[in-house]
Image 1 (cartoon, one colour):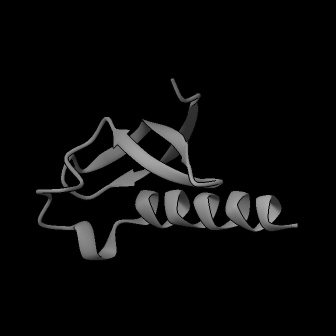
Image 2 (cartoon, helix red, strand yellow):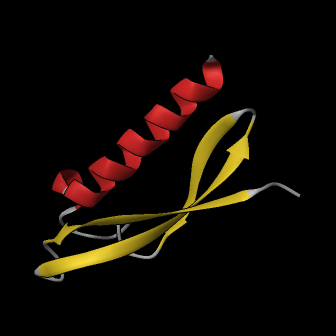
Length: 70
């Protein structure tokens, strides 16, 4: 069983037209942090290409994975 890491991301959601908090669940896979799920409709959202919150999520993953490489 792998460890689940939860992180909170805050920002403006264009789909909801408001500020919101999204909870992301990550798991460790081959010493790399992978997004398991996030409580927004990122996968089907029409604004996913320009989503500021998901940019935070991807930056978080990159930063955490960089730490794990050291």
